Length: 87
Image (cartoon, rainbow, N blue to C red; front, side):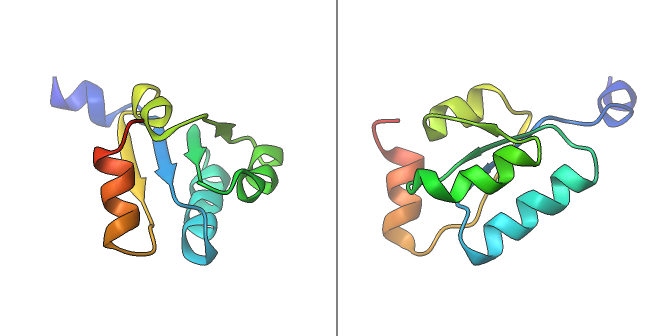
């Protein structure tokens, strides 16, 4: 089973598109990964949408469409909001 998972490119989710997160998500898109993205500030997602990213409405939507979820968030409060918040 592990061989079949590793032979396919996983769908990647990325939450947090600030200075570091947006660059990491862009690199994943450039490498040919399917990437779903979310940021609390929706305007940050627009440049990556043009590069092929799927813009999600919430962190929950990112997780639902992804095999792996990465985050690049500013502080503990932001992490708690994303991980344990309503969405």
